[in-house]
Every structure is written in C-alpha cells, then in structure tokens.
Length: 510
Image (tube, rainbow, N blue to C red; front, side, top):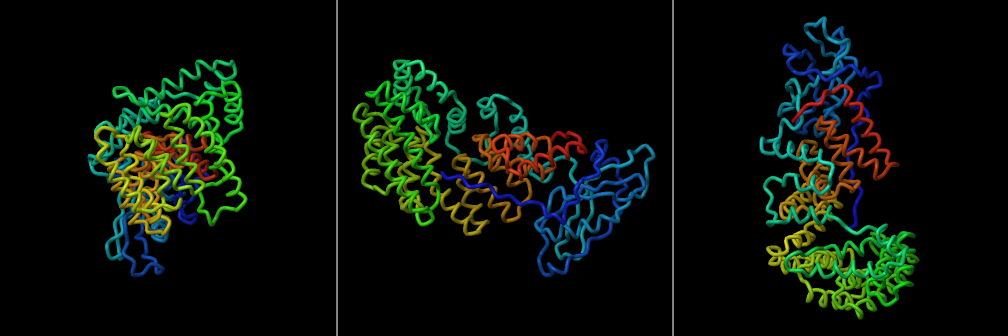
C-alpha cells in the first residue's frame, strides 16, 4: 500500500510565543502552589468568528516572573480554532499572581486553561491538567499507561507483545500475537544472504529457503518467513549485485531465479511509482513494462522448478497489476489460492490488484473480503486483508476532505484488525477535522505498535504526545522519526520543542 506522508497541523505562529529566554531552572508549577490563582482577563470573543459555536478548550503555559507579570506565553494544547487560541493568549498577557511567595524561583511556568462558554460570551479560567490525558475516560487512561510502560521495553518483539490491545477491539483470537511475530520475529537479512552468496554456500542458501517454504505449509508451525525472504530483494544496487551473483552460481535454483525476478519487479515498481496512470510519465510506463516483463518470465521459470513457490505466484500477480494483464493475474492467483487460500501475503496482494487505482473496483474488493472472512478463525492474519476495502474507501474520503466520514470508516475497520495504515489515516482525518484531544493518539499507538520504523507514524505520534503535554514520551517517537528521515525539518523542529519542554516540565506519571 502506498504510504502517504502524514499531514499534521503546525501551530499558528501568531498563537505561540517561542521560549527564547527560557531559564533551565523554570519548571511547570504544580497546581497546589497556585490555589489562589487565577487573576486573568476574560478573552474577547473575536469578531471574525461571530456566530460560530465555540468548541473545546485551550491549554496555555504562562511564564510568571517574580514580580507577578507574565513574561511569556505559549499554546500547550490548542482548541479547534486558531483565532480563539489567539484571543485567549491576548487575555493572559495581563494575568497576575495575587500573592507572591518569596521562596519561589525568579520565573516559573504555570499551566492554565480557558474554556469557552456555549454562547461565546464568557467562559472560565482554571488550572490545566497537571498530568496528560486527564480528560480521557479511566479505561482509556489505563490503556495509555500500559502503552507507555510497554514502550520502555527495548526488544521490539517483547515490546509489541506487552503492548495493550486497543480498547473495544473485535480482533480475532490470536491476531495481535501473530502480528507481533510477523512484524518483529527473526527474519533472514540481506547481509546474511550476501554472506552466503559471497562464499559460494549455495547449498546452505538452498536449505534455508526450502526450509522456510516447507514451514509455510506446516499445519502446526506455519510461518510467513518465505515471503520476507524474497521481500529483501528491493530495487537497490546491493540487491541487484546479490541476485545476479546468486543466479550465476546457481542457475537451476528456483529460489535464485525468483530472487532475481523479485529484484526486477521492485525496480519496475520504483519506476512506476504510486501515482495514477494519467499522472505517470510515458517513459516511466515504458521502462516499467520492460522490467515487469523480464520479472514475469523469470517467475514463470522458477515455478517450473518449484510449483509450491508462493512468492513467485504473488510476483506474477504484481506483474499483472503493473502491466494490466488481468488474465495473467487471475491465473496466478487461482493456482496460488488452490495451494493456500489462507496465505496473508497472497490475500493482501490480491486486494492491492483489485484497488480502483490499478483498474479494479470497490465491489470486487468487497466480494473478495467476504470470501476471506470464513478463513479468519483459522488464519487470523487474513483479517489484515479483509479491512483493505475500508482502507481504500477511507483514503478516498480523506483525499476529498470528507474528514469526519473518513475517520468513521477507518475507526470501524481498525476495530476489526490493527493494520498500521488504518491508524495513521484515521488520526490524520481526525486532526484535519481539528480534533487535537487524546483521541487521535489511540489509532497512532495501534499503528506504532506494529510499525515503529514508519516515519509517518513516529512523527505523528510524537507530535500528538507533545500536544498532550507529555514531552518525555514524545521524545522517543520524534527521535525515531528523525533517525528515519534526518532531513525532515518538521520532525527536527518538534524534537527540539520536546527537548525544550523537558527543561521546564517535570516528569509526571500518567
């Protein structure tokens, strides 16, 4: 599935006073120190939004000097309107502490919140939440606490297994655990294959791949490892060199032939890109066709030597999708489906071929999802394929800026299966609809559980946690995002913001 860069709302520049004079000693003051606070002006309802019903609350941090004056202010968590946030910021400029504590630091940060009344005529100042997610229901707070604790586990597999399941999910039994092993279980690496090819250990390589193929069809210890073995061969120069050498040294090996085919198919996909045909340059389409045809020929040769080689059938399905050869794709799918109808990779790639962007239809995807449904009880990972029609529909609604409808479709699908793309798109739709509460964090946590390497999930989760006043937890996600894409200016700026926030906000448990 083509990944879309996650779009996030940047705070309005006029609504944030940057902390240029931040004293490292200044900390966010606990509520008990300001029980007699608040003496702030009432924000004026902006003329530019007359007649618009106010929604939500705005959390602010104000830096109070020893004189009692406000030195600086910033939006910690926005409401649903930049204009309303600015009105609240304007009002806090005249806040005063009614009494002064001589023992207090020269400057100190205080969390305050303005809640607009229903008619916009007035509202209420109060101290903000001293801990993140205060407004979440108790059960949801417990979920956040468990997720936060699980995130501290270094081992990716154990971290995933310890993660709590999404509250209210309808996932089939065994899916969460199986998906953790699928995402983070031990896998063959490209460097491992390169080492075996380099020293001419063709027999060991053959044994490795044949063992994984046999395990895929095991009724007691089934594994998807054989598919990951071939996913290694991307369009890189390293993969090109390895597959060429392997095929030269073992020209009769079905696995060597299929590996070379997979590399050529990956190259074809890179040339094609994820855009619609009308938006793809003709020269790219021509080059893609040549590479895909070469890959198809090799996949066919591999299947003559090993008829159970599912990755080769799936490769042919992808070749057909790229080149529009429906008959080829249908035949390859029929033969593979007869071998293993519960293969997760097969069902996912078949769904991809049915997407409207590749010439398929929503009706065809829905019909196939109905065929897969009975297999979920014995093959829980297949549930990850049954939700793909909803994912495609949700993405279409999102592209049309029908944010609320998109979020609803994706939320329902996420309750069926924890596919990361569902969580990322749902959070994107919610925040595009100006929901900056704890709610978008839930689908982002589901996405991040199963795909910590995804840049969009890491950056979005970190940004959301920062808005929820938990810079310590945000820091880890944003560091991951910057590691994946060091040149992303937005991720770097948010990482810097989290580091600054850690200077004045004490670490607080949920």
